[in-house]
Amino acid sequence: MSGFPSPPRTTTYKPALAVFAALGSAWVYVLVTLGALTTTINAGMVFPDWPLSNGSINPEGWLYDLAKFAEHSHRLSGVVMGLITLVITGWLWRWEERPWLRQLGVWATVIVVLQGLIGGKRVILNEVDVPFFNMSLGEILRIPHGILAQ
Image (cartoon, rainbow, N blue to C red; front, side):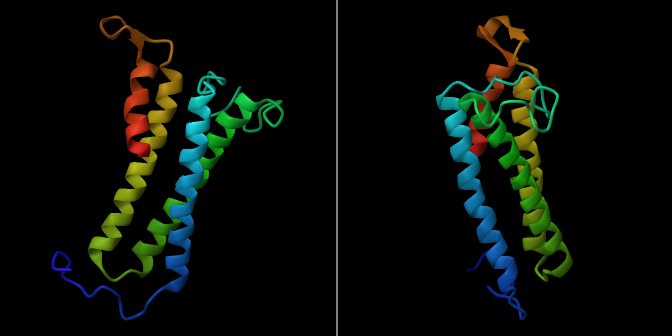
């Protein structure tokens, strides 16, 4: 790989980090799948507030109502993804010798946080109309939220 100035593997290979990063990659699939389910059944606005859901971390009835389950599960899986990303970034920052990989971890954290904030703003700004576009600001934010998930 000519683009990277360091060897492909450090002198102290970190198999636990590799496994945890693979777990994070698999969790992205869970998060995007729950987001797709939420969008498919039009459950994206079942909770009008953010970051809580109906003012609670554990909203009433979310395990029994499919729309509430889809949206709240998507939010919870987003929190888990954020925590996984923070752990990986901290791990890289503390133990990784290659500066470009440490910076990549920081950028991953920035992108995951940005994705979560866009999703949250989409909920909060759903009622703010943008007359020229014939949509609400929240509906407009669906576009970058969906694109970043891809």
